[in-house]
Image 1: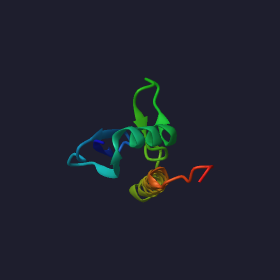
Image 2: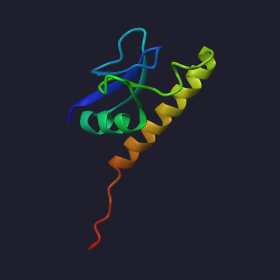
Image 3: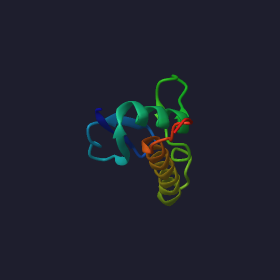
Image 4: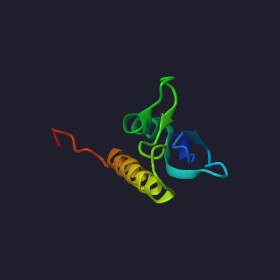
Length: 93
């Protein structure tokens, strides 16, 4: 499985790549398909229906408020990634 990093710009715009580019903050790293699916569910979808944003960053009154929004988003993505990596017992086990 290919590992991908989700990251965001100060505007809240989310991107994906091998690493987070300079000037961005990493959100999480994980298996590409799972990470993209989780981010897609949690992110705010932009008007173009392709771009994703971390909710609350663009409308934050200051950097502290923006960081709180990113912190919540990051924790939620990482928690959901961890849940997908746990083994689910089979019903007949």
